Length: 366
Image (cartoon, rainbow, N blue to C red):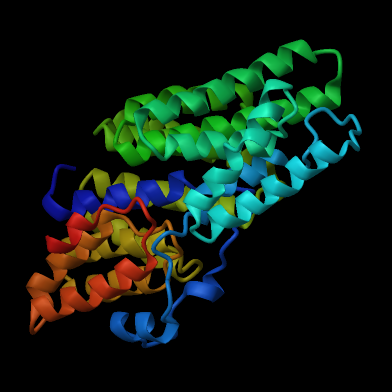
């Protein structure tokens, strides 16, 4: 478990999966950002040119619009007042700005006098509240209190509207979206214990949903608790099997990924490699490729590991690239590249183009 660069790879894989909500609306598609077959990092960045994905944070903020349900009205009551209609339009405009990397412009809208006035009248739509909370959370630990307050508001609304089933259902869904966002943030910070607290609340609110047990298993792996991870993964697998024909292909693949990550953490590298090789035949997502690269290294196949890591970065979406992934490939370049410094520089060009605004660029000097 505590093994040099491979531990970083595992952390990257946990991060990538933890941040993906099953039904989240992706605002940026891989077709817009993925690399053409055989394209190198330098060529990929040059072909796209322009501003790149340096400030794009759409993937991490997808939960906001998903949690709003695309509805600007919190409780289903019609409100045709011009001021509230304008707030709704401006909220959508701020969301689009955040998706395109214009965070400061979005903040000007979301914290303008009109929005503050609407907040005082308790007339802000949930999407606006969520976007404001996410903006605050991006600024550090104090901002996380905004997400916590949003979660508390969701729970209060469930209690206050207990006699209106459709409203309660909507606010419960929103509370789960906020809780998942908080658990993802904790995982990115490396605070697996805090993430588990949120995941436990999610599992209790939706006991038949396997993805929360699966995420909890990854948090246990991050803490080095193999037994806790095994129990969570087995529970997730049992819930997936219980769905029968209703289980999606994504849920079935997640069971296999859980098994592979558990085998990796337990140093059962041959079994892990076999598991991820089988997964690669079904899914070429970044998480699978990176974990397969880990397994390849521990089975002595550095060339395959390098190819998988490069492909995972070239096909990554904004928000998918982490410092851990970059450090891992840097380490492989030291072992396999003819001129490691040139290989690292080319990768750095691509990473700077693609990475989000809060990306820790110090890893590029690794």
